[in-house]
Length: 251
Image (cartoon, rainbow, N blue to C red; front, side, top):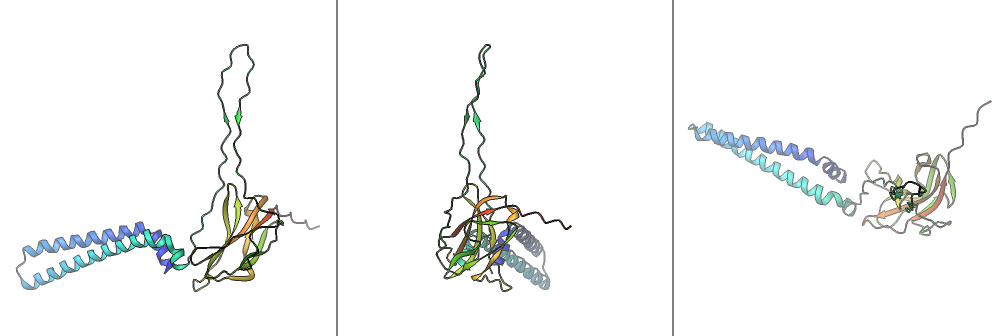
């Protein structure tokens, strides 16, 4: 059900176009039947034209009804899938906040005078979210990361393990901090063949390729969300990403 609503919302422009074409065709068929009916005197032919006119009007009304249904699904139901069906919103990748360029004050140099040094205004640099050395929010046994541990140094592909099992569980996601207080999802809960997301207890939350991020210090957190769209305090850990060691050459 939720997948069908999302598909309609993504393709609503094409659906509107198809329904408009169908409705216009049926209205034209109704007008043509109405026009021919004025000049028809035979009973059998009149009955066929009346039937064609009624069918065209019915189909035009059906197309209009479908357009109203698509509008309702796209404008009111699709944005609230989490509250209605517990479906996770489509993750969006936050990007680092752009650092403003230094500004300088224009000046004029008069003959015989020293050239003044332009004054550069210091601009605040975007930083990542600070995290205590021991982590934060990881005391909840229903929403916690067991591996990696706080302060871990990671390289290559990493297996993230823990528990995501809150009451009325909907889904979970593992995120990494970026510049400017933004968070980038690196792992999201997966659905089974029945389109159901299951909680995880002391198991594998997912695998993450740290090579997709630049080496440096980051914060890694687990966010577990229930069917009402609420979540306990995320379990957040400080980590460091380094480049994988080059393979040892074979003698």
